[in-house]
Structure formats: structure tokens, C-alpha cells
Image (cartoon, rainbow, N blue to C red; front, side):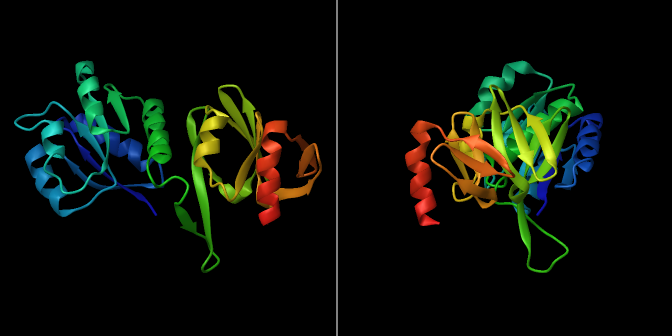
Length: 237
């Protein structure tokens, strides 16, 4: 299911740039684009979107003015050349605040936040070639790309301080995330933290001992403070 995007900026160069960035990501769908805030308001009142890339300072109608009358609350990524609007923009609980000129790398960071902070990230599914088969996935920032990983391909996750190494059936990637964040966001019925440095996928567990879990023929240590919760979950399986 694609994320429906709307772009509003009174500068055509800005809307063209965001249109190009959105077209590079297959899970984003551009459903509207406008250089006129008054026309965009009428469109948005009749068409629900998931996220608006929204300029703040525009003729006759600011980005803040446009959001207030909407009957629903889409996610918002503000785009502007003026940094002084940053504090006021966060009153709207926005996903991110992009300062022009916007690089593609900075745009990708915003999309990463969009996946993490919206309801989409860990429930979004994609239909595969087999009928009635769905697979949940998540995008992770790897170098300068957003890399899609299917959750059922993840074997275990290893903490590297401010980064994590995600081990999958096809290899491993390193992403700029803390393991504590993933512990909160990953489905608890599918992933469990067993050590201060490790989260494992329950469906890939091969064996359990008093001190380690074996996943993909690798022995991953069990931390003392995590053992009771692990035992409780395994008893329910």
C-alpha cells in the first residue's frame, strides 16, 4: 500500500524537486501537487492524503493556515527557506522540518521518520506473487539509501552503540538506529530482546539453553535481566 503524498509550495522549482524525489521511492505515490495554497486547500478538503510536503510562507495563506481547517490530520513535512519557523511548526506535531535547499539525502531522512513515527511502518504489507500472502516490511537508512527489509527475513539485531547491525537471511546491513528504539517498535509477538546488545526473531530460533539462543547456527547470549521475560514468552509458544 503506497503512502499518498501531496506537495504544496508556491515555488515551481521546489515542487518539481520534491516530485522528482518522491518518484525515486516506489512506496510513495504523488497524488497531488500545487503552487497555489488556496486551490490546494479545496483539493485537500475533498481528498484525503497520508502526508503533505508543505511550504510555510506563501502568498495570502501560510502552511499553518492551510492545516487548521482540514477535517483530518495528515502527517506533515514542512519545507521552507526560513529557519525561524521551526519552533512554531512543531506545535502541529509534524514528522519533520526541512530547510531549503533540500538534498535527496536529507529527504530520505524525513521519509525514514515518516515510516517510524506513523502507523504505517510495521503494519504495512505488500502482496507477493502468491495469492493471499502478505509480508510486513520496514525501511532502514543504510548509507545514503533507504533499504527495504522484510520482517520475516530478519534473524537477529545487534547493537553497535548508536547503530545496529541487522542480520537477515541474505546478509547483514548497518543502520543508524539505537537498539532500544527497535525494541519498542518491532512487533513483540515476533521479536524479543534477550540481551542489552541483541534482539532475536522468535520464528528463527533453533534452540534455547540456559545461557544462549541459537539462531542460524549462531549462539547469541542471553542477558540475566532478560531471561525471565524470555522464559515467559517461550512457555506461551
